[in-house]
Length: 413
Image (tube, rainbow, N blue to C red; front, side, top):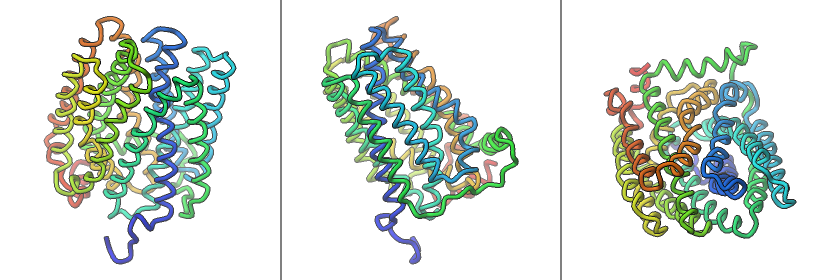
C-alpha cells in the first residue's frame, strides 16, 4: 500500500458496499436453505424441492447474457438500487402469499426466478463497483474482506432461516425482502463516481459478446471458469442432497441451519488468513489442493446423518475456500480493463454457474432414486473430477502470486 492509499477500514464507500452486501447476503443465504424446504413443504417431493433452487439459478444465469453489457452502460449505483428493490418486492410477495395461505409451487418458482434475475444485475454491478472504490493494489485484501462477508452471511443466514421457517414458513422470505431493501438504501449513500464507463455500440448483444470474447481469448481464465462451473454443479448437487437427506431423517430445520453455520465459521476463519495465503501460495496449486480436500471430506458425510459430525466435516473442508475465491477473483479483476468489468464478470458468471442450473434438481432426484449414501458418494467423486480442466492446462497450475498476475494474464491471452 502506497502512502496515498487509505486503509480499507477508512474507505467509506468500501465499508458501505461491504456492510450492504453482508446484510443482503445473509438474507440470500437464508433463502438458499429455505427455498428447497418450502418446495418440499408444498409438494412433498425432493425433485420439486430441488427444482425451486434450480429456477433461481436459471434466473441468475440466463439474464447474465445481457446484464453485464447493460451494467457497463448504466450507473452501477443505480443498477444496485433498482435491482435490490425489485428483489425486495419479489420476496415480499412470496412472504405475503405464505402468510395468507395461497403460496403454491408456481408462485414460489416465480419468486425464485425474479430473485435470480435481480442477482444477475446485482453481482456484476457490485463486482464492478468494488474495482471503482478500491485501488488495484488493495484488491486481494478487499476480496478477502468480501470473503469474510460471505461467511458472516453463511454463519447468520442458514440457522436464522431454519429457525424462522420453523416459526412461520414465510418469515425468512420477509426478512430477505428487508435485507435487499437495506442494501439498496445503502448504495444510495456511496459517493464514488460510478457512471457508465464503456463506449456503447448501440447493440446490447454485440456489447455482451465482447465480454464472452475477452473471457474466451484468455486460456487460463477459460480453464478456471470451466473448473468453477463443474465445481459449482458438484457442490450444489451435494448441498441440496445433504439438506433434504437431513430433513427426511428428522433433523430440525434450525439444526440443519446450524450445520451450514459450522461451515461458515470455518470459512470466516479462513477469510482472515486468505490474503496471506494468496500472497504466499501460488493460486493454481491452492485451487487444486482445496478441491481435493473438499472431495475427501464429502465422502464420509455419505455415511452419517449426525448433524454435528456433518458440520465438523464441512468445517474442515471449507477453510481454504476464501483464499481460493480471493485468488481467482483478484486475478480476474486485475487483468480485466475497467470498461469491461461488468461484462466480463457476467460472462464469467454464466460459464461458472451454467452447469449449476441443474444441480439442485439432479441432487434432489438422485436422493429419491438411489438414496442418501450413494448420492453423496457420487457428489464426492464429482467434486474430485472437477480439477480435470485445471490439470490439462499447465499454465493454470503454474498460476502464481499477485505480483505475477499481470504477466500471467498477458501470456495466457
